[in-house]
Length: 290
Picture 1 (spheres, rainbow, N blue to C red):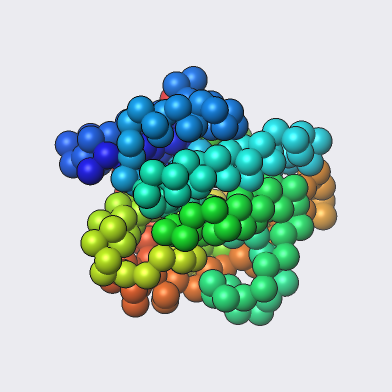
Picture 2: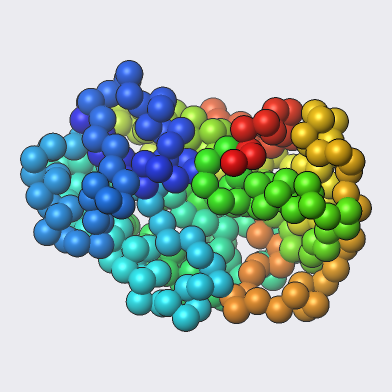
């Protein structure tokens, strides 16, 4: 199968590329290799490579910066997705696309299901929702996989920031009023590949699915779990104190959902994919240090 992978140097993209290299005829493209905001470039790549499946792991993820850089956020998170979807439809290909828990406002009192109303509160969330809508409108054969709090060995993420600060500071202030499901990037990649295989074989339905960590936690709880593991593995000289603080004490440009837990029962029922075991993923943190 010919597979075009975008965002190939990102957190999930790098793992996807590694897993796909020996399983498919793969064109793995980063931003330098293919500017997906350029419609002509996308169509030229699709015409030349003739993908049967496009996996879009590219995104503008600078949540706070997006508030003052909305044009770029929408160019990557909406317009580029439309280009990929239209190119896929033109060549009879399917699209797998990674989205986010930020499409929800975080005001619900239960984990979000795929059918729950969306109400993004940030430019990032709004641009990602616009991308979902553009994909659904242009390419019927698609899967949108919403995930949350992604971390892994590659790229920037909360875990890598914690470990860097934990080497220098004895006390870390971490917000305690944001709750979600940490998701290991490698698990997200494995889930996407399993979904791709079943979907292209006609064994599962196209549409929107949630995949995230199996246990929801607050930010400060997640931070403690990471730092304890790092110290246990000898990667930190001691376990820094995690001091819980309110997000009001650390104002940011973008509003983040207070409770963005995702209900992952649909993907488990349709594809047999269990939620990410993020605690086990913390058992080897040696690769998180640059």
